[in-house]
Amino acid sequence: MNEIHDRLKVIRNHFKMSIREFSKEIFFSHSLYGQVEYGNREASDRIVQLISSRFNISKNWILTGEGEMFDSPPPDIRLEKIIKIYNTLDVSLQECLLEQSKLLMKIYKEKSP
Image (cartoon, rainbow, N blue to C red; front, side, top):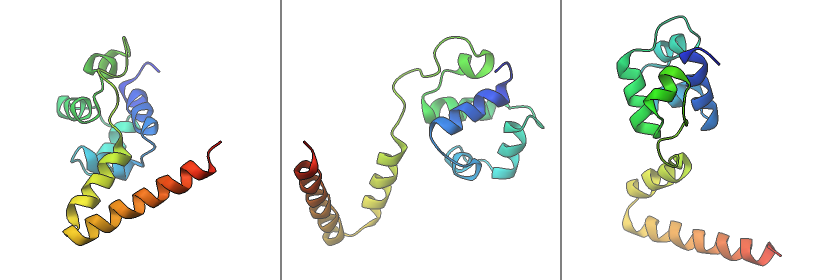
């Protein structure tokens, strides 16, 4: 894994995202980002900075492969998606979502040993 594009793929795969989903998170077109990840185009400083800040990835690791991949614990993308959905709902639907979550947790606890 000597090339930046290889490390970018590792990052994206870590978060189980498609190129389209990942590029959307860093505000790039999927075609441009795909070219970077496939090694057909160099990773700009801007792409490296956006990936580093958005996903808490060490810039040094992206650029060199040295050190730890994460600067701090990785963000939970699934939780962020749930929060975005929750914030788009009106108050009554937010309450419904909370109640459904409580019911799911109750079912989960009943099935857990």
